[in-house]
Image (cartoon, rainbow, N blue to C red; front, side, top):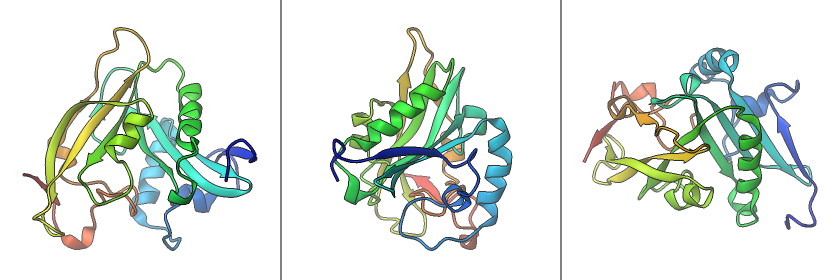
Length: 209
């Protein structure tokens, strides 16, 4: 799957009808199903500017990026003229071909007068997604971090969550993270490494370590 010899197409799955499956789900190998929290998030975030694009290579969906103004973000990140990446993924079998940077170019072309793009990165977490080195490769830098662990699943394993940023203009103010709120986990995507299952019955599923 060479980027030089392939046909690339980036599809806006919010504005183009017929792509509901890819709007609700990610590209991880999980069965498609609607779930309440995802629907609630989309209903609130889309009117506030949420964007989601899926990258097709030779007709196969291999990558995606979802992002929004900070006020519609799935993370407790705030700041002036900040856009936040909820996720940017390229499937492992398509990795190493620059597709992540292709998706980032689409982000940069579509955020208007944004001064900063922010997101998270994980260090020492078993998930293959959101790895610190991957986010650094895309141009983000860590400006803050906390050590965390899951209170139920593998509580002996600590990992570090980073607040990442990419300033787009000189003099841009760094974003901030509500680290206390992040201990709740996230519920906008069931495949997210920091997903909080309601079945656990916990207000905060993470703790500092």
